[in-house]
Image 1: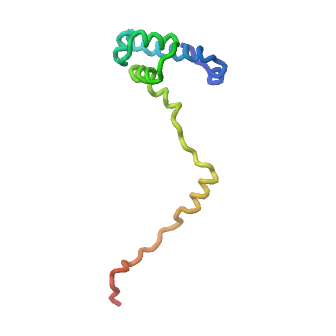
Image 2 (image 1 turned 90 degrees about the horizontal axis):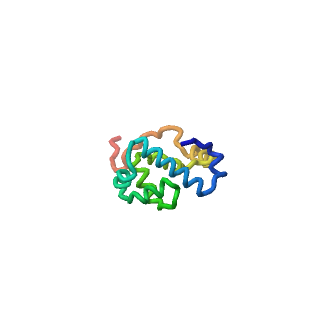
Length: 115
């Protein structure tokens, strides 16, 4: 399986991308020394569906997720993680309202003074 630089992903057709995903699946299945039948059974799909995926044919997203789970490569989905980033202006505003020092403790209003 060849590694493609990220810039070349944009140059690939949808069909070529599907074949690349299929090659990725096949590579990891073979590294685990599993047959298509065994891996498909573990994923709860048919062997023919697994074969379609490896050939770059159309399968559902749910099927792809099941296959990634069985191959223990769900970590590839980390790319889809959304990390909210605060703008520098919003961070500055938030800093403005942070406590700069501790306040002194106040006496309980309900307690009577003995003075």
